[in-house]
Image 1: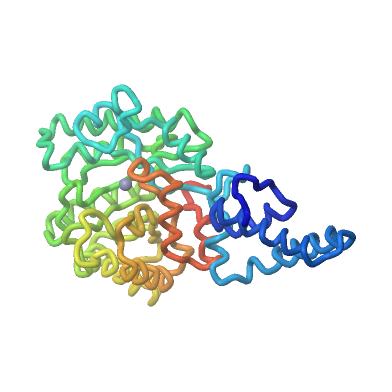
Image 2 (image 1 turned 90 degrees about the horizontal axis):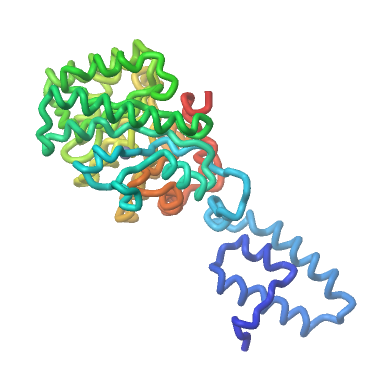
Length: 375
Ligand SMILES: [Zn+2]
């Protein structure tokens, strides 16, 4: 019987550790193999056999059907960044944190700074992060901020985001944000024309209470998007969650998306969002997929981020249904994102394991980089 406490590193321990059986299991497995070799083989042949066994394990590991999941995709043991970009991260000023939650209590007063985001990227060995300003949160109906104050608070949060991003020019890229239903939205977008820090626009339909079933609101939002597109801004748009369903996605694609012109549009959370309801996330993604498979020009410049996908409590059936739609769309259009600091990049990588992507799909996802993040 092997005593785990007495285990010492053996020549092929590093190779077996590639199988990611868990620390304890790997050690037991390695020492069992070693004991068998000692029992059946003359000493003179042991060194040669060790080399042959190690070589065979190296060759066979990629043939295991679940090898991509087992090989370390995100281990901080490697010094080389293995994921290029986290495409969906947030900071939050102390002013915003006084009104909404989800801020780091470790900062005094609570806030989320660029240094926190860069530390999370480093922990996960991700090269760059796209920071989406949370200015739109001041428009949350529950906060009852008056429209004059809203314009000022939106500007201050976008300024905070720009100043933070400026501290890490080689690591962070920023997007401004607005509530598209308020008067000041267009002025705010124009104010940031030619900014070096805020080079895209984030919209959050749920937080801004955008009702795409209202023709008037569709026109308002389309106008805001057309102004951003005229400035050449790419956009991240959170459409999903709540009642947003397949018919709403169809309205978005046909009546709002054309206003983005030649700008790229990244659909946040692959069309999902909180609160999740009746598998709407799958229905919305399927609607996009239906356009993409028939090469509809309207969806030619649409990408999707996988922040909070699959959700930590997503069922296996829904996770499989999401993967089916992702495969119809093609992995090239999917971008890694964590929704930091809701999740860290490292936590989101573990979530992506539950999608059970193939080795090639995972490799594609690791390398995918939106044009604004890898110019
Ligand atoms: Zn987000």
